[in-house]
Length: 216
Image 1 (cartoon, rainbow, N blue to C red):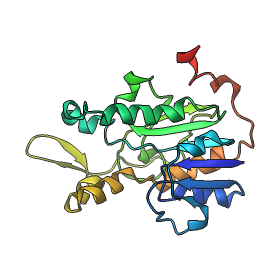
Image 2 (image 1 turned 180 degrees about the vertical axis):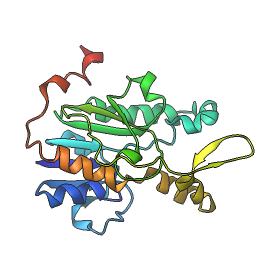
Image 3 (image 1 turned 180 degrees about the horizontal axis):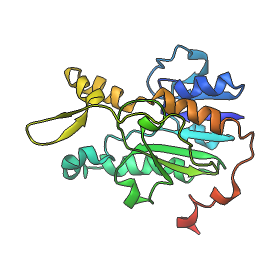
Image 4 (image 1 turned 90 degrees about the vertical axis):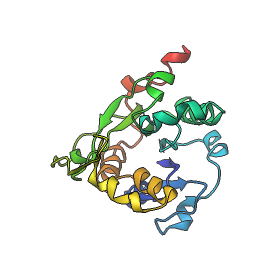
């Protein structure tokens, strides 16, 4: 299959799909950190979405969409949030028959529709919590591969709790911290590759209309 992994500089999904023999490409405006420049398209994904792909797995930026930044939403009415919503919907309304859009819990559940599935890293071998939403078109739900504990938490004076895995990144710069937050866990990437990479174009007909109900 020809697979576009959008907004992925880490290449964890791209490398996994390549290992299965698929023609997968990562795409991001940043250089890749996965070590395979030959598989990385460092450019805007917008023109690439006009091409024919068998599968698109997208990780659109969540900075202006996720609930963790809700306290700043009023400041983002300057166009940043509406631009982020519009970018997300470029994937939602794409003609490709097999699409996954990944994002944290955020405003897309109301701006568009509720996710098809919600997963956690601890379902895929990582002892930590990060609620992750998947909007799926033509793809089956991801099946957990290894259930483990949900990891340690750090509690702040305000009463707010945060996973230790992310709290430990607070000594980094805002950009580095965002990068840590956005990385795809290897266990989840492996599940995407092994479960969806084995489909061989046999997309799930019952899932095909999930993205298009709004426009019918």
